[in-house]
Image (cartoon, rainbow, N blue to C red):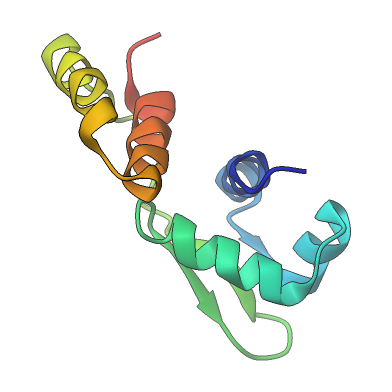
Length: 106
């Protein structure tokens, strides 16, 4: 399973559930907890995701204020990101692609 796909699925799950346990995510995607923490670290660069510790309330959270359906890029913003893609590093391309996937008009 590719990391980009898994991260996308983690984000989608969090958009619906708002909170999940790291162990639950690791089991669902058949990876280690460390892999999930790495995924969350990458996702938190572009999304309001954070982790907490503690029984019951610990885990991975998506901030309540975040609603992906609320925010959309304009056509000019989308065009600019698409034109910039070839000049970006692989990691920055991943972030730019995730922005386009999440916020570009359908």
